[in-house]
Amino acid sequence: MSDAKFDILVVGGGINGCGIARDAAGRGFSVCLLEMNDLASGTSSGSTKLIHGGLRYLEHYEFRLVREALQEREVLWAMAPHVIWPLRFVLPHHRGLRPAWLLRLGLFLYDHLGGRRRLPATKVRDLRHDPIGRVLKPGFAKAFEYSDCWVDDARLVTLNAQDASRLGARIRTRTRLVTARREGDHWQVTTENSEGEVASLCARMVINASGPWVSRVLTESIGANENHKVRLVKGSHIVVRKLYDDPRCFFFQNSDGRIFFAIPYEDEFTLIGTTDEDFDGDPKDVVIAESEIDYLLAAAGEYFSAPLGRKDVVWTYSGVRPLYDDGASKAQEATRDYVLKRSGGAGQPALLNVIGGKITTYRRLAESALEHVEEMLGARKRSWTANSRLPGGEFAVDAYEGQVDWLIRDYPFLGSVQARRLVRSYGTLARTILGSARQASDLGPAFGAGLTGAEVTYLIDNEWARTSEDILWRRTKLGLHGEAIDLAALKAFIADNVRRNDAAVHEEEVRHARA
Image 1 (cartoon, rainbow, N blue to C red):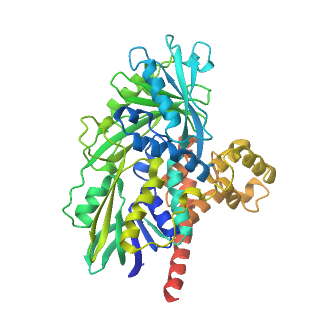
Image 2 (cartoon, rainbow, N blue to C red):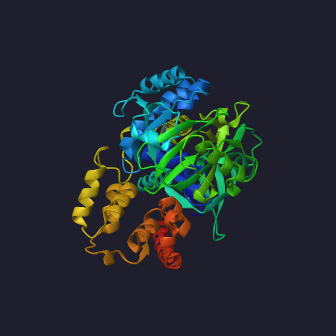
Image 3 (cartoon, one colour):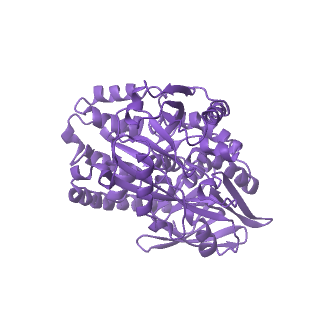
C-alpha cells in the first residue's frame, strides 16, 4: 500500500468508520480504512445490541435524536434482516418511580415521532394475567409493551466493511495510524501493521472515527491542539443463563434514575445491562468492575422472582462510549447525539473528527459526514444507502423462517440449530459458506458448537478474521459455548489459513501494483 493515493482516509473500524467508508465508496470516492485491531473490537461490540429510538432520551428533550433514531429502525431492519429483527419490550410500572401517565405519554410520542410502519404499536399489559408476569416478583400489575429492534452489533460492522470493500474501499485491519501531516493539498500518512511493517499513503481528507481514541489520534498521530470535549462513559453488561422462555424483553427502571434491559440472548442466555459510569483510562483496558456486577445483579433482583447471584454470571463485557461532553452532571444524562467537527479548507486538506453517536444512527451519521466530504472534495454520486442492502440481507424482513427452511431443504444434513444460526449470521451468504457440500464432512473440521472449517475459512477470506477471539466473540458468539469448542484445533486451523490468505493477498497486491 506504500505511496497509494486516496480521496479519503478513515481512521477507525467501528460502526461509524465502516459506515462512512461504505457510503463514500458507494459514491465513487477512493477510500482506505485503518483499524489498529480487529473490526468492532472496541465500542461497537460492547453495546446493548439494540436498534432503538432511546425512550429515556425523551426525558432529556432530545427529540431530534429520538426522531432520527426511530426513523432509522425500519430502514436498517430492511437493510439487514438477517442481523436485525424486531423485539417487543415490556416496561413494568413501578409504583415508587415514574408515574404510569408519564410512561404512557412517553410511549405515545415514541409510537408517533418516527413514522413507524411495520413495527406494532404500544399495548397495555396486565401482568397478573400475562404469562410474562410470572417471572416477576408479586406486586407488578401493569406494564406497557412497545417495539424496538435487536442487532448483532459486531456483525453489522463487518457487513458494512465487507460492502465497502466490494465497492472498492481498502480495509486494513491491525494497522495503526502513526502520523498524518498536512503537505500542500494532501495528507502524508504513515502506518504500521501488527508485523511492524511501515507504509505510507496520501489522502485528500482524513476522517477520524476512532471512537474513544478520537482525542488520542487527534493529538498524538495528527499533532493537533484542538479540544473537542469528549466524555468517555463506560457501559457494562452481564450474561446469565436463560431466566425465562418468553421471547419478549424487559425495560426496567432503577431507583437511581437509570434504566436497564433484560434481553433473551443467543437462545440459551439472558443479557442484562447497561451501566453508565464516567471512565478515565485506556479504552483497551476496559473491564467490568465488581461494583457494576453487584449493581446489575441487585437491580435485576428488584424485579425477577428467581434469585440471581455471582454464580449465575457466565460472561461479562464492557465498552467505552465517546460521548460529546455537553456538561451533563451525570454520565447517563450526557447526550448520545453525534457531533462532527471539521478543520482545514482554503487550500489545506480537511480533517473531520467524529464524536459520539449511537449504533442506531450510524447510517445517518455517515450521510452527514459525506456532506462535509462533498463540500471539500466535490460531489460524486447521490446518497444511496437508505434503500440499499447489506451483504446477505437480500430477502424480505418477514422471510427469515423461509430462508431457514430453504437452507435445510438444500442442505438436509444441517440441524435446525445450525441452519438458523447460519442464516442469522450470514443471511443468503450462508450458501457461499456451504457451497457444494452434500454431507457434514464436506465442510471440513468440526470444532464444536456447529463451527466448521468451511465457516472459519470464509471468515478469514472474506471478513478479516485472524484469531480465535475474532471468530468466537465477534463474528459469532460461539465463545459462550466454549466447553464445546476444540480451541487448540481451531487455533491451528486459523494459523494455517491466515498464512495462506496473507500470501494470496500479497500476491494480488503485487499484481495490482505492477498493473
